[in-house]
Image (cartoon, rainbow, N blue to C red):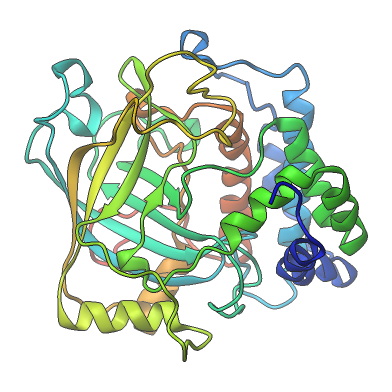
Length: 388
């Protein structure tokens, strides 16, 4: 199937129709704090040309356009507080985890950052989510699923100037090994299409069938339980002096067929059932970039890195202990957490245009949400959900 069918268009339209319809009920909320955020994606940014990074001449303007679209979406959703994330709004749960380093399979030159000390354990929070707004959408709806890991008590200056002294390291993943947008220009076109509603989406699908089919493939993957789902970075990152991608692979493979009687919150229910009975486990793995930039690019995240040429290598074990997480207090804590790939040490720097856009947009989203919700914007330091 090289060209998407009308079913594909209908699928994408139904996925995004709610957020598009919200344009007609826009609130007048303004946030002066947003004016202080630089929309220059390359401001103070040292690109890694040796790893294949390349700044688009229109990158600053394109990033500003994407940022504006997200701000508008945020404003449109402030009619009914709390202000939610414009993407990955619905969380299935935020759980406590231990991230234990196992670096014996990688060369010494890559034992840097959080991977420097073998057997070191990091207390972590992990958030599992659905990708698409609105947050109340059923888990049975076509969607992408997310896994965001936040390691705590990670010493060293971080990449975001505004949070350079925070002690966290984030890893963001979704349940597909590639992203769906190939270029920055196409990213702008897509966010504009979403903003324009069904007519914009129809036009986008007509002129960009390949990207539309990429979305179709990602959004129609079945998930039975987030705790048994494979998650991928999709975009590249640094590990010392080289480029990598990473993944979280369940220690035990299980069927991903959706239950026949699945309800609107079946993914949360599956997590609750699992963690009431036993621990969950992932192997955290990295894939080193090998070969040419054409074979394993850093700017085009729609291209799969060949696992036969560079297999994933385990570098840590993630243990999610048996626990109770589905409480009102922990749900509120989850709502106020912020995740960004730029909560990172320089040796784990995000690479490529998608991550450069995230650098600006995710900070904007975090400031807006926390201001609107009158919530503290601080990184956690332990498992005490009230100690922030």
